[in-house]
Each structure stands twice: as structure tokens, then as C-alpha cells.
Amino acid sequence: MIRAAAGLLPVCLVTLLIAGPPASGMRGVVARGGAAAVAARQQQWQLGALRVPEAWKVSRGEGVLVAVLDTGVDGRHPDLAGAVVEGPDLTGPVRGQARTGHHGTAMASLIAGRGHGDGRGVVGVAPAARVLSVRVTLENDDPLRGKQRATASGRDALAQGIRYAVDRGAQVVSMSLGGGSGSWEGSAAEEEAVQYAISRGAVLVASSGNDGDDANRKNFPAAYPGVIAVGAVDKRMRVPRFSNRQDYLSVVAPGTGIVSADGPDGYVVGDGTSSAAAMVAGIAALVRAEYPGLAPYHVRMAIERGTRKRPADGHSRAYGHGVADAALALREAGRLARPAASRIGQVGGYFGGGPLPSQPGSRLPVVVAMIGLTVAMSARVVVLHLRRRRHSP
Image (cartoon, rainbow, N blue to C red):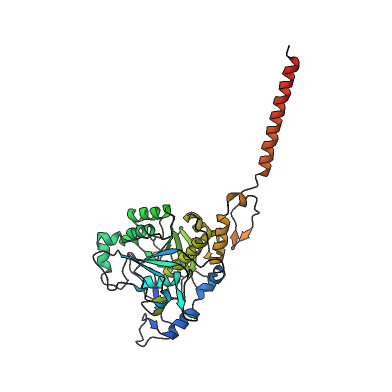
């Protein structure tokens, strides 16, 4: 398992290959070919865990543009054919080895992969969405990554990328990154860009980080207010040791043994909160497509309310508000999208593994009382007027 170094970096731990070991016998080499594409589809356990097939009956992300701020997306991959909008390379004057990146391609496939052929390739959570590729960082193993962080443009790449994406119409911004601007304190430029994006109606999603079993540092951009911070769970819905535990954690999603696209035609399996964040960005795209009028705050609320395995007190540093569920998030979004009047008088209950927030009570008794008071006061005025007339000379 390869740990990523500190700084603005892709938060993914590449672990092994699918479709058997590669010819070279080296870990991390990409599996390619038809057998790999078939195995990729068969091993997508996360789709069932997130209840994505049920959600597709309502929404597939049509018309939504998701910005992938990462190492670049390779639009040549067959699973991403027609899905990628090329954006700029903001890594500055020090540019890395490749124009498009492995990590960014993997994240894009988990968001909007279309698969190819019959039962082959990776299908994303929102397969009808498009992705805007904006390169803001270099791959972990790129020897120039350290030099990029040392440049002013490199330090501000994420902030620039957020603003660029929103100005080009991105409704969702996916950031499977950590340690913004080469530090663990974040930056004013990034926080201002986040608030700018939210004010323009964009939903921002970021990975919580992969050093939960070590320093468990506060991770940016996940820690910025308004960003949906995502941790990981395994197939048993347990939080793995590497997933960061923080008070600002929103939800958790599948993050171990995740198959994703790589390069122009390959596949890898990896662990990390990167994958979990990409999938929740896909859920946000499903919600955005079906309910385009929802504010970013309400999209986040729908995802947080529409969870399973919710902690007993509603939130924990490890699970956030619970395990993300695409179908339940859409149901909650539908409730939040209703006019306020239609929600008056609803009976509270349980939904998505946890209690619903208290519903406003009916206003009918108040209205009746006000009418009664008005009638009584009017009658008193009439009576007083008649008495004055009888006693007047």
C-alpha cells in the first residue's frame, strides 16, 4: 500500500491489480485488455453498497457538469468516451511527466464512467454526467511535484481551479486532494474560492485524508466550511484505519478494493478516501440533475440525512452522519425541494437509518385562533358603537 506524501496530493492508496498479476509482477502496474474490462465491472461492489441502481430509476446525472480538480483526466479511456471536457493545466511553469494523470482519470471514472460494450468497464455513480478536467496537482511519484508546490502558481492552483470550474458552469466540484497549498493549515485564497463557489451554487466535495492511523491531521480542502468531507468504509461498512476521523466529516462511502480506470485503457484497484469522495460527488450530481434548484446547503443536507448506519447520536468523527446512500439522498432531496407549505403538518418518523429532523407543526390552530380573536374584537366594537348611539342625546 503506497502512502502519499504531504502537500497538495491525490488521496489514493494503490494496492493491487485486477485480472491477475501483471506480466512484470510489479504492484501498481495497470491491468489492460478485455478480461480486465470484464473484471472491472464485476468487482464494482460499491454500486450496490451505495444503492446506485435504485437511484438510477430517478436520476443518472443528466446535464450536470462535475469538475474533477486533480492530476488531469485521460478522455481517451473507453469508459470515459464523450464524458470529458478538457480544462487547463494550472500546475504552473513546472509541469510534470504527463499531460493527463492516472489519479484524475480514476476519480472521473468513479463519478461519470460509462463502461463500454456489454458488461465491460467501470460505470460511475452518475454515468450521464460530464466531467471537466482541471489539472491542479501532479502525481505522487512525479519528481517535479515538490518543485510545483514551491511556485506561487502551484500553491494557488487549487483556488484557481475552483474559480475556473465554477465560472465554466460546474455544478459539482470533486477534490480528492489533501494538504492544500503544501501545508495542513489551508490558505485564505482557497477558502475564499470555496465560498465563491458556494455563492455561485456549486456543491463541493473533498476526501477526508488517509492518515487516520497516524497523525490524523486536519485535511484541506475537506475542512473548509461548506465542503462535504468524505471518509471511507470497507465492504463490511467499517471505517478502515487509514480514514481520517474529524468533527467536520460529513459522510463515509466505499473506499477499499475500488476498481477504477487508469490511463488510456487500463484498470487498477485501490484504497483511499479519494474514491469515497468521488462517489459522493457522483451522488451530488444525481441530486443536482433531478433537483437543480436546490441550494448547495440543501444538497449537502440531503446527502447527510439520506444515510444508513447512522451513529446513535446522529454524528461521529469516524462515520460522520453515516454511510452515503444514493437512493435515500434523492428521497431526502425531494423532501427538501417541496414548497414549505407542503411540508406543514407532516408526521415525524424514521428514514434512512436515523430520526428525521423535527417537522414544523400545523398552523391551522393558530389561524383559527387569530380569526376568532378578530371576530371577537369586531363584535366588541359594534356593541360599543350601538351603546353610544342609545345613550347619545
